[in-house]
Structures are given as C-alpha cells and as structure tokens.
Image 1: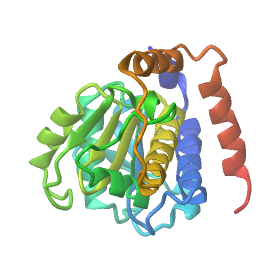
Image 2 (image 1 turned 135 degrees about the vertical axis):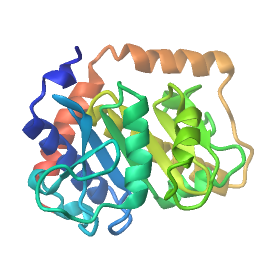
Image 3 (image 1 turned 180 degrees about the horizontal axis):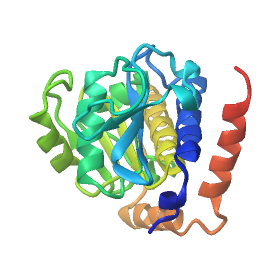
Length: 241
C-alpha cells in the first residue's frame, strides 16, 4: 500500500483544490476548460474532478465532485462535468492503478510543442526529466467519444507524461503533488524549447549518455526536492491571488 492510500478524502480534496489554484496562478488554465482529477484513496473506483463552469481559482475542496469510472456523479447535488474530462480521466484512472492524479492542460507552449513533428526535444536539464518517458497520442478531435479511450490508454502505456498531438499536455502522478510537479516542469520545458527555437540558431542537444545520466539523477532525488517542492507549493496555493 502506498502512502497516498493512507490519505483521507479531505486531504486529497485539499491537495487537488490546491492544484487547480496553482494552475491558475501559473497561467496554465484555459478559462473553465481542461481538468485535473484525483483518485479517492479508500474508494479506488471513484474520482474527484472539478465542476464544469468554475474558474480554476474558484475551486475549493468542497466544490470538487465525485464520479465513478463511468463518469456518473455518485454524491451530492448534481452539477455539470466536462465530457472530455470524463473521457480522458476515467480511462486513465481505470487502466492505471498507480494513477493517483491526472493533470491535463491546453497552454500556449504545450499546444505549440504538441504541433511540432519532433515534439519535446532533450535540450536542457528540465526537458531531460522526461527523457525516454514521453508518450504521444494522435489528435482525433475533441475527446468526446468513449472509443478513443482504448487508444489513449494504449498510447500512454506506462509513462507518466503524454503529449496530446495538436491538443495539449497530460501528466500522471502517484500523488497529486507528483502529477502537478511533472506538469509544471513539462510546461517549463515547452516554453524553453520554443524560446530556443525562436532564436533561429542551431540547437545544441546533449549527447545520449548525458541525457541518460541526467534522468537518473532526477530519479535519485538526493535532496528530497520533490517533497520540499510540494510543501512550498501548498503554501503558495494558500495565499490569496
């Protein structure tokens, strides 16, 4: 049993609401669109997701809805839920028992990189966090059809990062904090890549041996950076806009 499975529902609600507010704070929201979900630790077939129509900065622990893997709201007053959010998130949570949290964004930088044939390039240490671990899913139109779920899950495989072609970014975490940390860094890597490409000069890509070494250094995390980062982000999320 993972540490996430010992969390209370309220703790998960608080973490997930913090992610919504952080996405808004860092400018990664898209009005009322896109979505973040978290599995309920004591009910693994149930998910928390946002109420469609709320701005991300408005999301609170209490406003999050509980849905099952069929996308049906199973508690509380019925409220609108983004259909694309249901299709994408229920598919991944159902297929990946390790998926505690799934984050999906439509940022300018993320969508721009999703439109590039080469996708994410291993240009810098931020991008190398994802070395060999990025999946790609072809654009099939707005994710409203359930039959796309099979292909979406197959393309993601065991990776925790996926670029949805012509669409946006998606990350999966064993915890809410891990999923957000991956998304923040993926967004930064996309921004850095576009800035480097805009210079119009020849790009310098580290050799494969350095790429592999760098991702190994991230995995080792000798300073416990991931945990410290999420604690700091929770403090930031608690601050007023």
